[in-house]
Length: 260
Image (cartoon, rainbow, N blue to C red; front, top):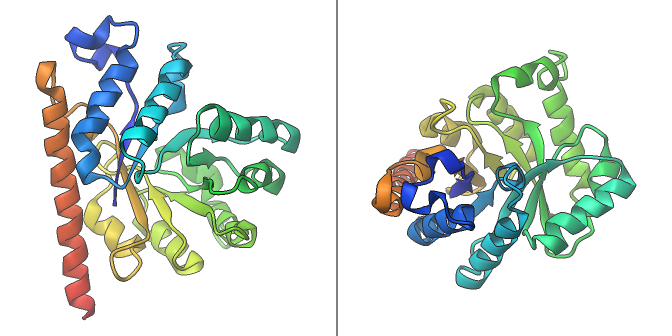
């Protein structure tokens, strides 16, 4: 269930890589190689590359993952959302330029901002539903009787005609996560917010797991990327990813035992 977020920050990249022209690519590539045995997906964050004018390194990284680990999908965390004609171009960016398998999208311009992505064969979208950040409640949890996040979840069920939608639901709000799971059934959920943002694995599995140990893609970024420093950073990342993977397995097995 573990997804490793690839959110490189140059100032935190180990000194022996930091000044390289391809520093972001090399750092993330080494993280990918170290953690691939323990993950179900990778999630590069587009802004971390774009801010450094390193879009070519992002494309190279995704190409590397596809070539070396073809069974691991790549989620491009871009949070796109615009009118239909512009959304068509963003879809080309995500699926043609970067060759991502899944892209994160904002639904707040309606289905016209989502539909161009849904029509790409073999590709998926992760629609923002109940995000993990503290300031999200002012809109997503309003109004109390029928909050926006539940309206988004219901809409996603209607939009999901090609069975290629998942929802983004933060680990920091387990009660809302449970509501989403009850509404959408076995639809996959991408779960940010475990670790640095304060989300807890046990609460996530209790609230969002589909019986049998499926249905969740649980993201960790900083807790894996920056688990160690210096030349052995990748080894530390692997240890952190393995520990997270093992913790998820243990909790999932405990829940299976309870259900049986």
